[in-house]
Length: 297
Image (cartoon, rainbow, N blue to C red; front, top):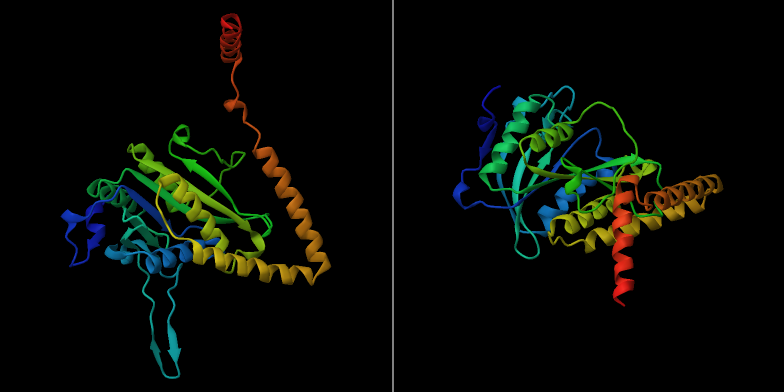
């Protein structure tokens, strides 16, 4: 493996000795950025909170430009406005002045192991104690319900909130999936948050996905991130979708079907899983304790 340290370059103005944070938030692209949740989160955090760029990764080493072609404009007789893809690391301060790092950009196409090792190097360098991976996926859910945010972790027993995806799935890996595995193997704490959003809005902007992810991130990490603007934008999009669906009886019938399916699934998900239920010995011990209190009374 090539040296992972050389994959990341600091900006000239950055004094590396002064940068410290306990939390890393990762919004690198994956199979799809459903509802543009990651892009909305990146823009929202940088625009609403104090931040500065620490550095960037060498995208020429990491990206397959033919697979992820950057955008460029052709103006009558010349090219302009080439959008160079960048994987950046920002230092951001939340509403209470607490620092955290934001790693954003397109998903690496190449050198995944080296990239993962480089992220681990930065985690050690800045004393990061917990990494959060944010993503969104299309799902058969209705826009009239808040997005379900599934939790995963390197060590599921460490999760303070149990919201898993029921079932076992095997599919093509993403870089963030590999990153989760490698960081856990290295003894680093990681938590993944994945918002499930309506499949019929996955190609457009769906600020409710970003709102749900940042809300859950705040609960899990303690970061204070303003979400008022996202809440307003979410209300507007929901109202617009409501108007469109009300004008189409077939669409409304399908929406009601999604609502019933989603509500039934949520009710089932709210039930305790078998591993959360006490076993016979635990039940016996609790009954004995209860009987002792009766004797004492």
